[in-house]
Amino acid sequence: MSNLKGRSLVEPEDFSLYEMESLFSLAENIEKNDKILSDSCRGRLLATLFFEPSTRTRLSFEAAMLRLGGSCLGFADPGSSSAAKGESLADTVRMAASYADAIVMRNPKEGAALLASRYSCVPVINAGDGGHHHPTQTLTDLLTIRQLVGRIDTLTVGFCGDLKFGRTVHSLAKALARYNKIKMIFISPSELVLPEYIKNVLKKQNVEFIENENLEKSISELDVLYMTRVQKERFFNEDDYIRLKDTYVLNTDRMSLGKKNLIVLHPLPRVNEISIEIDSDPRAAYFKQAKYGMYVRMALLAYILGVV
Ligand code: NCD
Image 1 (spheres, rainbow, N blue to C red):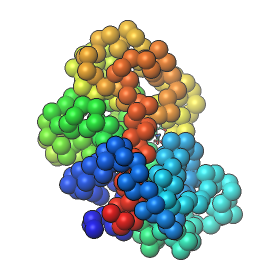
Image 2: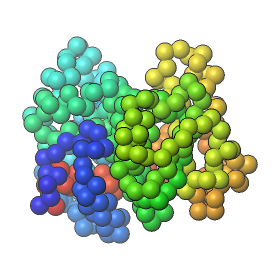
Image 3: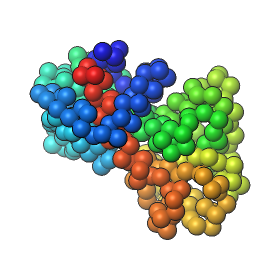
Image 4: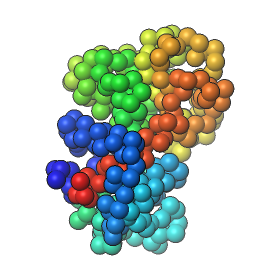
């Protein structure tokens, strides 16, 4: 029995490196033989409470639970839940916890997942809380790096796009800071730089990082390029969004400056920041990454539900 049984996942640091290693090994075994855990969650219920739009995260959690033999219930649109009648998050979560064995929640408010985990008697998995964190995307990203590069250390990782509101960037940067010899390059317009609180975490852990506004200048140095979408829904002013949305577009000219063994990741959805012509480049790894997301979520559910 693992000690992840019954645990919530709100921020990437909630699990130790050792616990994350166990998750990755199990996910890799499931990828090799997707039958090893089928039926292990029969009779278990997963509640998916999505107060914000999602395709990959919700569907991959549902696919993961169904492939483990369990079932799912929930909503993908808060308009169809009692939140629309004014119910508090604490009450919605208490209800879901009394019906299900675990809860996956996405919410536009920073801190919502932490609050939910305090009111829930079953594990709560944060599937994104506003512009704050998205720890299961980080598990997905780390597993993809481990699979495709073969290591999660001694790497130069570039993050490009909306580093201010991009919760996947915040979670991945904090998580990578715990590994050895990771250099990070943060590429964004000055309006969308990485928040100070994440930079402080990196400084405290003596992580080497630089910030610049120029993708061409940095791409040749990178082992991993993490592209992100400008997060339209977090802008107060539409004109700012329109001005900033196409600052970086990864096209064949820019890709030609990258290393031969570079991998390009993106949490998806992409809007315009990666041209479709890049999809056929062997270094484009974002669709594989989405698939690894399902395997790592299967491993996560199996551990927190205590079936392995
Ligand atoms: C990301 C998210 O929701 O933060 N998507 C995802 O979960 N794969 C990234 C994004 O929406 O840009």
